[in-house]
Length: 170
View 1 (cartoon, rainbow, N blue to C red):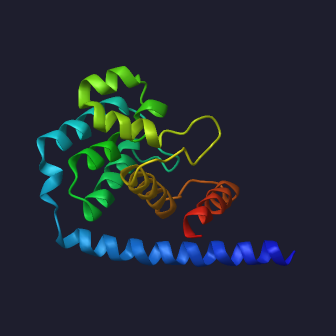
View 2: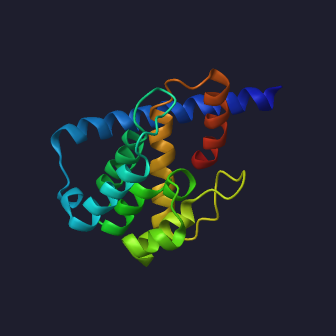
């Protein structure tokens, strides 16, 4: 029982820290526009993401691309690497966007496609075998954005996602 209580406390502390971090990022976002988002390579990835996820909605009724756009925006605050930001736009494209790895590779190049493959869930493992710092950044931005926007999720789903996310705080 005490283990469960301490896990619950850890989840609450983690969520509080994430909320505080997101608040800071959201405030900064109001005043800062990273020109890397205007990069032609990055803009192409955003356009492809919007095409692949056209018509898809999140549980709260928002367009799916509101999530992929936010992931890329979070990444643009911590890196100027256009491949990482492009992969942020496309991080769910293989799972949810109905595109093959070969098609993605031909459209955005090897490095972006490799990063997308690296962050793609395999089976039920929500933490793929991340091998690069860049993939870890993308996966972290994805989880951070999901944790900030769980409207429409059942309380059970929210708790399960937060429990899995405790991994990131240890």
